[in-house]
Image 1 (cartoon, helix red, strand yellow):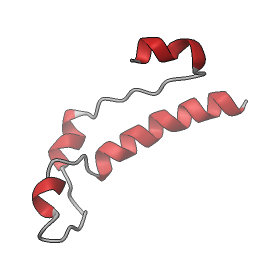
Image 2 (image 1 turned 60 degrees about the vertical axis):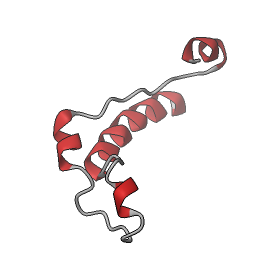
Image 3 (image 1 turned 180 degrees about the vertical axis):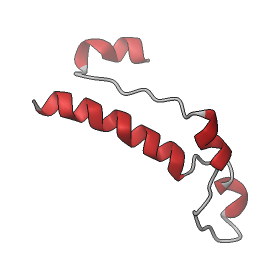
Length: 64
């Protein structure tokens, strides 16, 4: 799918969460008892921070 999009996109940000951020899991996140089983499969704040760093670099290049 990405190959088909390449001709029409300006930039692509692809991030693989590090093992250390995955190990932190959903630390500091709060879920209801019903949401908790599914939420344990989510990437946590540390992984999202890694995405933000890469996304910010892409946005800086596009804004210039």
